[in-house]
Length: 109
Image 1: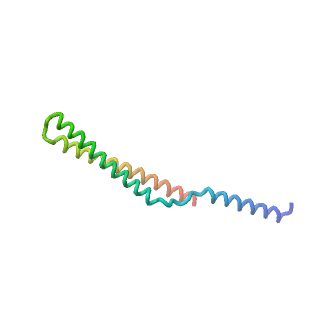
Image 2: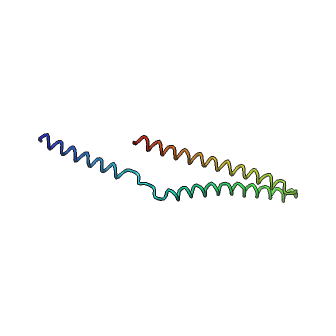
């Protein structure tokens, strides 16, 4: 083979490799706003679940012991604290995922 033929073959091979790389690149997310809404709903549900569970335990203890709603108030506040703690943990997980994605993008570039 002559040298120009080899250069041409190498260029075609290079073009095919680049095309294959572009085909495997991740597609841009069109539904990014939906995933953010899903994350927000997840956090709201975690907060409401904490409140509901705390309220239920407190109310149940008040009925069981025949007391004024002191346990209901106490456990509702504890449920609120637990819900907020769970929300913060979820936010940290999401932040870590986003930072990992950004680092991966920067590493590729």
